Each structure stands twice: as structure tokens, then as C-alpha cells.
Amino acid sequence: MALKTLLRNMLRGKSMNNLKTISVTQFSSEVKDQDCLIIDVRSDAEFAEQHVKGATLFPLDRLCEEDVLNAAPENGSPIYILCKAGGRALKAAKRIAPKTSRSICVVEGGTDACIKAGM
Image 1 (tube, helix red, strand yellow):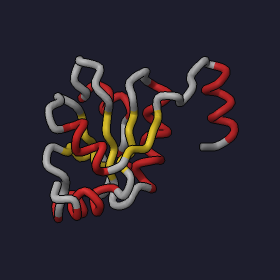
Image 2 (cartoon, one colour):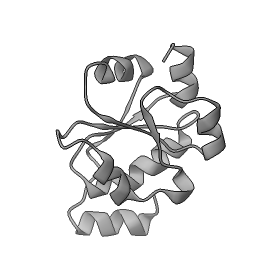
Image 3 (cartoon, helix red, strand yellow):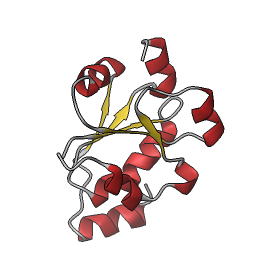
Image 4 (cartoon, helix red, strand yellow):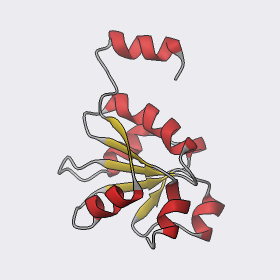
């Protein structure tokens, strides 16, 4: 995140204490019995090829933070973010986290790791 953006968020009282990275194992156990939002920030083509069951596509290059937050269930559950391996998901998380108090969880290893784990 650019220093200018970080400082602006700090001045607005918006921290990113709600952003965390979780393992695939933790992700799997947390989403099993929970109504939550899982977003995939890869491209349309990557998503069409394979994706985690229940994931909704929000490509990073067209990501609108407000659309993501509006798609999240009203129960306050975390928002889980996936990409191929983690880089784009972290970029998306850094954009979304300052706009909400919800937990924003980047899944380590992304879709590739989830697919290898049988998700």
C-alpha cells in the first residue's frame, strides 16, 4: 500500500487490524458451516477453468469494494479472498479492509492450494 494511502487511512481512523492471512486448513474449517462470502479476484478465464466451490468472481482489475461489501451476508461473517497463489488477494484485501470492520481473510496459497486440498 502506498504511504500516502496508509497515512490517509490512519488520519480517517481506518486501520487494517481486520486483515489477516489464514491457512487452507483453517479456511476449510471456517467456511464449512458458515454463511459467508468467498471472493476470487482472478480473471474471468482463470475462474472459468477452475475455482473453489461457493466462490464469487470479483476480478481485481474491476474490483469495486462497495460491491464486495454489498454481496456479503448481513451476519458479519468474515470475507475470504482467493486468487491463484495469494498476491492479488492481498492487494484486494488491502483495498477492502479499510472500508469495513469485518474480518478480511486472505487464504494462503490461494485457489491452487485449495484445489490441492480437495476444495
